[in-house]
Length: 380
Image (cartoon, rainbow, N blue to C red; front, side, top):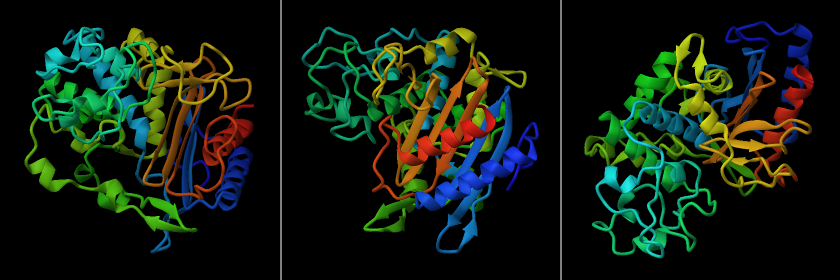
């Protein structure tokens, strides 16, 4: 599709045609199942298009309106909710999370050092994912006698290790402070105000719009239905303020590329999009301020990880970009933007040849090649 109706401002037909050709070539070259992209320029979504297949078994083509689980880009929604609640005075980002959780969260090697909201947001809490991250039992002394295994050997706040458990814990804290179930809080305070079709709860979405995600195994694509596990039994026995990992605040958002671009535009415009205030400018700056080394190599010492957003100078040569990647069940995604330049990119792929080596910049080929091609066509 060229310059779809989703676009806010029509891009020129020649650029749209070039983008269509480039994206079509890349999914063939990189052996991808399907690809959805969106381009932001001058604070508008100027291009949104999809290529390839939504479902290999049925041969249905992927549409720009179709939804995908976006994996770790979801963390930016969770962080946005935490910043909203902090702005509302429910807590300070430097507060001890133990006070709200109702049990002690302490690295046993540093028992006097409080673990804070800020540390969870920036992956500097010293927590790790070694014991999994789908239950808070792994850090709750009343539920486990081996909580020490969930911590690294360094002092909280002094080093970086990417940690999904930390963001599932943040989702739990959102419920505790708001009194709303996690998926409903995100809907009521972020998704609905922005008019997005998205949810952390797969049961709230039209199943006809869900894009099949594929792992690449032994040279073939294998469907990963667990990406959209409805978790019906877990929701029926849900305990507010504890069962939150059921919705995966660390990676469970389902959305399409153009709506994810609107979420990015909130960050690009000091917390406001289309007249809707989601965050204060101060909260946006806090999220985008690097506080720890990022998960991929960087040349610029100013680059690194803030609150659910990475700053990197390695994605596009000559540009410092802010955003996040995602990868789970075979899905590969990316959301990166340049607030000063007022441009950005979304890409979501529901399966590609994962045996292809990563680029030297630390990104997968499909993330890097797609975004750089769109940059060359629409921005450079």
